[in-house]
Image 1: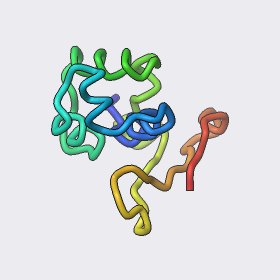
Image 2 (image 1 turned 60 degrees about the vertical axis):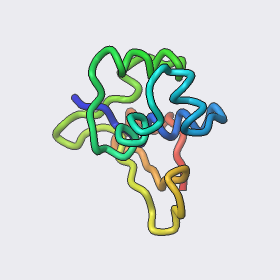
Image 3 (image 1 turned 135 degrees about the vertical axis):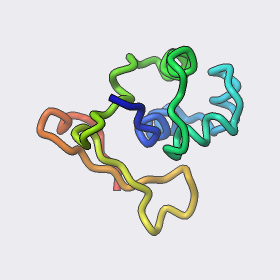
Image 4 (image 1 turned 120 degrees about the vertical axis):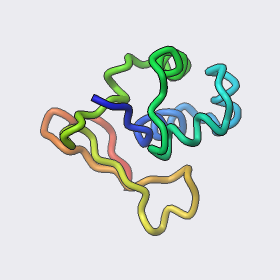
Amino acid sequence: MKTNGSLIRRRRIELGHGMNRFAALAGISGAALSRIENGQRQPRPETLKKITSALGCPINEVMTEEDGAGPACEAGPSAGNDEEAACEAASPVEQSAPTCK
């Protein structure tokens, strides 16, 4: 399993936090959070714990299977900035999770 940065971003936005404000709340740099949310870096376990604690969710809510199973989120062409994403659930189990278009 690996961290799905799009799920972190979606949850952060749902909580009403901007990137830098949330990064400070989690005790990490804004640059590190940006790289994690954009899938450029996988966080160390201690960093992931800080992020999920600040999000108020268990770690498994921001994880995805490495074989592609799990939530599928991609920035859409109309996203305009890193705050918006077009998301859809990848499995029936995920159907209760909120989706965004």
